[in-house]
Length: 179
Image 1 (spheres, rainbow, N blue to C red):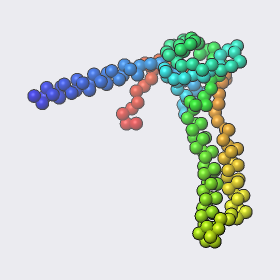
Image 2: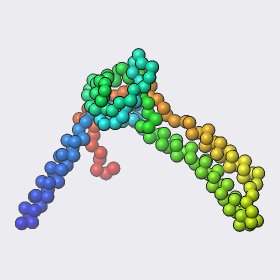
Image 3: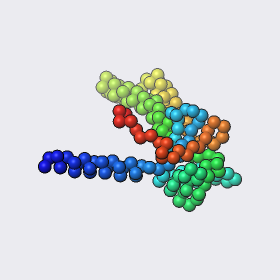
Image 4: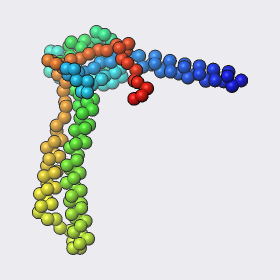
């Protein structure tokens, strides 16, 4: 009886894995600069795409319905990757999250310095006061944070080494079990 139970559970597991593999069989669109794989940005079906089309002066926001080898089928448009001039990547590029976290560090340091100096003076002297050096250092840290905050990767312009690739699902390798 246990052998039959094992076969049943094995069949269920195999069926589930097979169904999962079928559901992930979709083409992907990759934005890549040169051969650098670290900065590649991947778009899949169902994601929002903000793009600038040839002969237009404004960006269009649309949802990717399907990606074929020659066309990107959107909810309100069908476009060839060759017609795309630029793509807005502010929300999509993971490097922007790193830059956002990096710009918060000086601000947090400045606020922490002011907080520590204020608590120290309250405890030692019984009143709230700040030394001029603390105010200067905290001001510089806060100003640095404000100066770094607009630095982001905003657009992916399709020219030169920047290219759009459509990769069929057969070419996409499954993640290794060791990762």
